[in-house]
Amino acid sequence: MKNNMEIKIKKASELGDAARNKIAELFVEGFYDTTLKYFSKDKVKLRNAFSPLLVLDLFYVAVVEDKIVGMAAHVGSTELALNLDKKILQKYLGLIRGLFFYFTFKSHAKHFKIGAEERTAIIDCLATDPKFTGCGVATTLMKYILGLPEWEHFVLDVVDTNEAAIGLYLKLGFHETGRRKAPQGSGFNYIIYMKK
Ligand SMILES: CC(C)(COP(=O)(O)OP(=O)(O)OC[C@H]1O[C@@H](n2cnc3c(N)ncnc32)[C@H](O)[C@@H]1OP(=O)(O)O)[C@@H](O)C(=O)NCCC(=O)NCCS
Image 1 (tube, protein in one colour):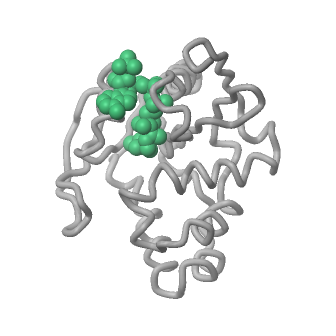
Image 2: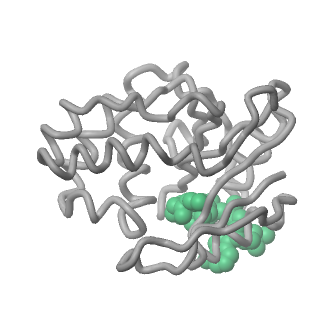
């Protein structure tokens, strides 16, 4: 069924709060190894921290047979996909780690150096349910977002060890615009910036 499955793209906000927990779960699964495990080893705590913070208006989800199997956000240069709240982050991640996440996520967009006049979206939080990878879910989501009329250009970042994502972005016409040395001990060498 995986090869012929119908993948529908929906705006997360249209699915209401029912979508929140699933998106938070995909976020945690997708970014645990590269980033989130440094903030907490407990995936339930991570999910509880991020679920209320998701800005659903900015997310699209891929739906197969009524199940959310993938997600991605399109974010303007002055927006964030998470509505950062120190109290919530500190409640679940602890005082120091909660604050650290707050500042790390907040500063994430500044590296793209997008001019205020540009119609450029940051593509963020792309992840596919591990049970559905390799079936075209991320490709379908990305193509949908790349076709949105409100944006002219798209930027994103990806760690240099993420071959699956880099392969996908190159296939969709993204090119590298720069790279930054990754923090020591992060498990990867560079954060690569790409544009289309
Ligand atoms: C990266 C990710 C989103 C890909 O999702 P997906 O739904 O499996 O992607 P698709 O099935 O649409 O595959 C698209 C392309 O990605 C590349 N790709 C996917 N899996 C790959 C792998 N294991 N190795 C190399 N390339 C791979 C291929 O170019 C593939 O195209 P092809 O099928 O024509 O060869 C998914 O692996 C994921 O959620 N990873 C964890 C979160 C993450 O890293 N997000 C990106 C952050 S920048």
